[in-house]
Image (cartoon, rainbow, N blue to C red):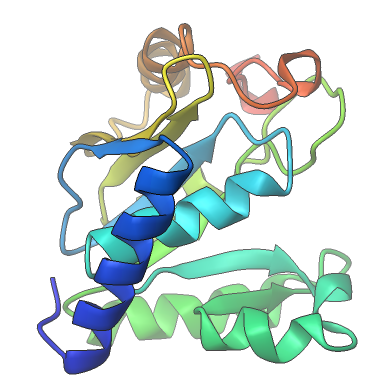
Length: 193
C-alpha cells in the first residue's frame, strides 16, 4: 500500500461513496498480482473496482479496450491507471506491461477476464499467460451485487494445470453475482480442452 498524500484523499472519497451506496469492501490486496476481476457484466464494475483500489490505497493498471480512450473519457481513464489495449494487436501493450512487471515491486495488473459484458463461451486467457510468464500470482477480485460487496479474494500461484487452476476460479466465483447476471460467463478457458 502507498502512503502518498493523494492516496489518503482518494481513500476518504472511496469510503464516503461506498458508504453512501451501501457497499462494503473486504479482503487484502497483495503488493504484486495479476488481478482477475469478475463477474464483469456492467460498466459499474469499473467504478467499484476503482473505489476498491482507492480504499486499499493502491493503483491498479487496469486493461481497458482502446476505443474507450477516445474523447473526454480518455484523460479520466489514464488518470486512474487504465491502460489502453488494442484488441486487434495487444502485443506491444502486453510486452510493455511485462517489462514493467520485471522492474516494479508493487505491480498490480487488473484484467476483466470475461473480456466482454455480453454472453460468450470462454474467458480471455491473457491473465493466465501473463501470470505464467512473469511468475506473478493471481488474485481473484470480485463484486457481488446481492451482498453489495466488492473485494479481494484469494491470491495464489498458477500451477500450469489449466483445468485444476480454473476449477479453483470456478469454485470461488460460483456464488458471485454481477449487475446483469445473464451476461456472466462461466470461468472457462478454451485451452482447458
